Image 1 (cartoon, rainbow, N blue to C red):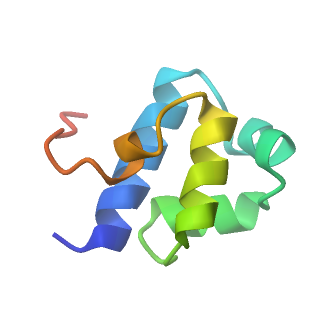
Image 2 (tube, helix red, strand yellow):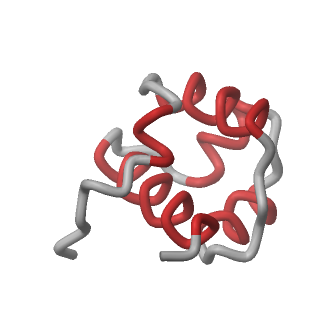
Length: 74
């Protein structure tokens, strides 16, 4: 699987599980809603630092953003 799509899927799933909107993550992380939308669509190639900062904004481990073992059923 393309890592960009995997990270995007994981990010979107975790964001929804936390009950957060993209705008709320924007406020927590400093990344624009436009960037976050592109990330969720697998159109962004985030750096390791970006992954870490986004995981902090979601309150999860950065490993969860790159974990390929989880599948999304929704």
